[in-house]
Length: 248
Image 1 (cartoon, one colour):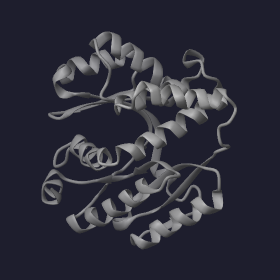
Image 2 (tube, rainbow, N blue to C red):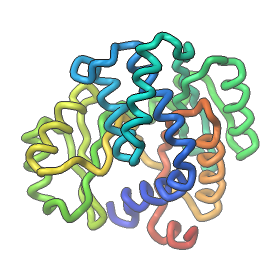
Image 3 (cartoon, rainbow, N blue to C red):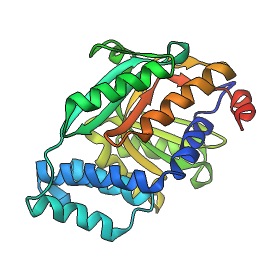
Image 4 (cartoon, rainbow, N blue to C red):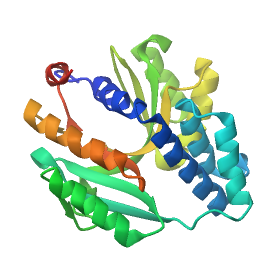
């Protein structure tokens, strides 16, 4: 981890997302409704819905909003959304994977392609950057919850596959199918919920960026986040602590 901080990268993006909380809640509602419509409204038997609700709660989405999103699916009046995945390259050759829920795939594809082009990147074919990532579960805790050695032992006992810790926090990685079970075990062992828990595309080899490249990439990521159909954006970028400090 020398020379960069994974958690400072996370917090830089989170700061921008916090300014768009109403948009985030809309995206969470869409995911909750789709998950409930596909797998039923029982959280115990629907892992996707459990994870969607957990993620929404971690971002302080009101319980009433979550309940309304589930009720929408139960009432049968939810829109028919299609899951789409787009891949492409951003500034500095960074690989980008965009996950979307859309009721009009032509509109969404056109919008995403335009966003890539305006930011100096280009959208590729499916699989063009997917090989740069692996699908895993990611759970994060603040650094003060326990020390690195204890977290490593607790996480492996809970069924995790890997742990990365630094002064800013702990990141626990799981097999995609084991995420919810590991969350439950860690919550019990550590006496509290994680700071975040989600399925991600984890970069195999992160791409380091200069200040100029980082500025251009953040404009691309912000533009993708602003699109109503885009749910999650993954990138294989890494920004050093020094560059983050320059970006403010």
